[in-house]
Length: 172
Picture 1 (spheres, rainbow, N blue to C red):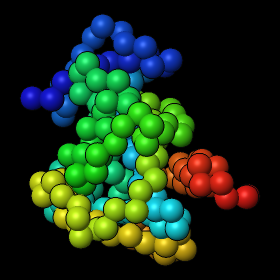
Picture 2 (cartoon, rainbow, N blue to C red; picture 1 turned 180 degrees about the vertical axis):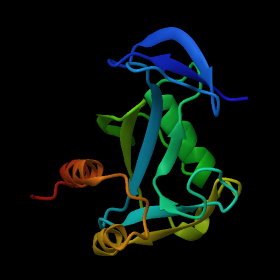
Picture 3 (cartoon, helix red, strand yellow; picture 1 turned 90 degrees about the vertical axis):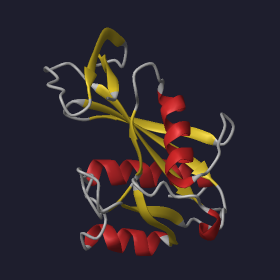
């Protein structure tokens, strides 16, 4: 049974929790979700395909990440999800928060890590991740356009591309 902290619109804990799969958050109540974008020094994106056994978005190419469990802050959740799903260790110097997007009932924190890890050296969490691979930005953008990657929305992708370009020192 996974518990989530219920947050207010500013991200502060309300003191209440809910149980994953049984949460009926009211307007103004949120839970914390993290996405972690792994990008190489050459600007390639490490993408992952979700396990076919996942209840939500089975078999889809999607962002690394998930919900923060009760008691976790955003950094702790991102660090845990990155290591659990892909086996990539990080720390406060390598894992950088890029943005927060307020969604219907979630506060989505977007994180970034720059690494050139070999995809063959990843340790995939099989019940979460079916496969992972590096793709160029062009390939990634094409997958989004063609519906081969989960559609998080235009605002989301505009934000991640802008913030990742800033991290990599790409002139926009």
